[in-house]
Image (cartoon, rainbow, N blue to C red; front, top):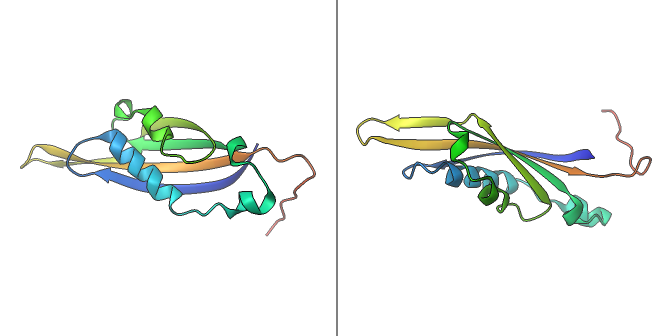
Length: 120
């Protein structure tokens, strides 16, 4: 598989302390940076695309990976969650604002010899 796309995003949940919501917003931020005309231009099937999502938050165990995967409109998603992002504590209110980061990589099987990557 060859990686064709890499996008990054950031999302937050300012008041609800919801790590999954912040992660979903980070995924939405990342995918809204892309227009994947590559697939239609080359006649590639979106369904065959493998999508690797890495989410960084301070409490990885609090992210529902299935909910995050459902944010992706195309491809077969694999979501991993690692320690990252940032929690911003508000001692006056006793709350935490959650900031999540997302990296989305899209991979596609390209038959050998069909494409050639050139050097810059």
